[in-house]
Image 1 (spheres, rainbow, N blue to C red):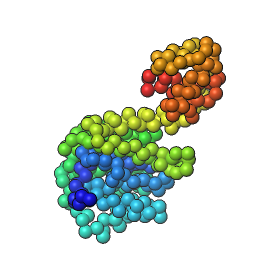
Image 2: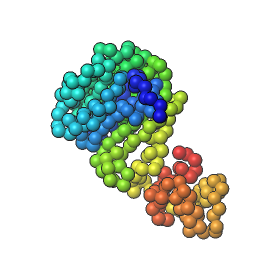
Image 3: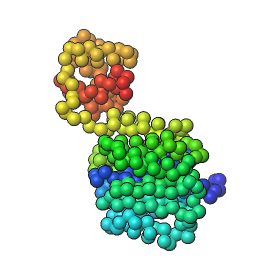
Image 4: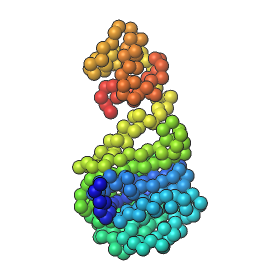
Length: 288
């Protein structure tokens, strides 16, 4: 087995944030699989990013301290106080009340620094300049939508502001909400990672759009009534995909649609034959 080398510095820009309901981290870096190291979060607890010469023990230890109700600044101080390599660390934390705190060790490579605001902690090292951290904070504060939307908007703005001055390689998004993971059995609502890609932030945004297709529930009020025109569009969409519709009647179209939907992991969006989830139609017609 090959000997493991010393872990390289993770040149990174990240944002830890909460909207009062969800807690999450978005991060991008010229570093392979940054999502496997930097982001940590807990539903109703807080969010944390450990980077530069990252100390991954900060993750579980920080989550435990946050779960005890300690404010972000106290958690930062406790984690770094006993760390002999703290001068090489960078850390951002948001607590359950939206309090934010950062730490940038004196040995982190320029540009290294942070910005905070209620509900968000933004930090980075080996960045193009302070404008990257500014873009994280200001875009998050000015953006709308759910936490996923706001984190991705902030990450994209920081990337466009110069991001990691060494280049691009990976990005990740982690969002926690109570009982919102797969099957409602855990809190990991969104956990998306782009491990190696020339445009990782753009690719992360694409994956987030797919996540909404497969996992975000459509409001019943948005369901489309199935009329003859909609059946015609469904038949045409299926035929364009090379899927045979056995008969001319509506039920034959839905038999073929349900078979296709099962292959595409859309079965949760197929709710009978009187109403249709518009996401299914857009997916069938190649609009997603």
